[in-house]
Length: 320
Image (cartoon, rainbow, N blue to C red):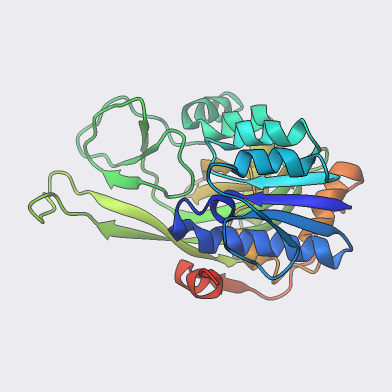
């Protein structure tokens, strides 16, 4: 089969800081598809991953390249900022077989307000969205349509806007569950997310105690994370992707406190895949194809563990 794997950072070169993570995911997927006998094509604005066939792309032409090349391929998979994913997945679906989420599902996952409402309606624990700050409480401020820990802060005060949401801060372990969603959801691993809280300064170089503002940054993960609550985490992630009608590789971010709280749903491959591919005996490429064209196994085999940081990805996947 000919498979198109389009990753936004590599394909556009808009934000060079995102290229290491994007290239890591892209290379992991491309190498897996190639190992099981398929041809891989990927848009690139300059970054080469050493496998598959690169297709010249720019920020202006990325969408057109996806549309043009999808017509020549038997299947495709997109990795892009959550707010852009619905439109790009629609382009993919109209021209080939989409191995990822439908545009409708991706749109619901991307909108943190709609996603939270859907989760709560299904009885799945998620941090509540706050309308105004209450004294003595902490809140997480993040873009309504952002992804990962992008522009995410921990605050005690906030002003409500259309672009950002404030959700109650939950103390606990920062984890994620990686799984393949479909007719028979297949959990892959529980991952430990390394989250850093960085003190932020105001214009005068101070951090007023009344605001207690910290930036929240993601800095890699450990996979698998061994916990006696694995089954509980898997059940939460499976309920989440069923509730949102997801398909394909998914990353469900969870804060594990007295119970699991779903804090983000990523309707696409995530950076954790880089570590998973090093401890999972099965090929992720083959699993994604079986999910669409065949039947998934009941479980996967995990051996050992793997830890990576964003700095490490930068060293491995800087512009070559």
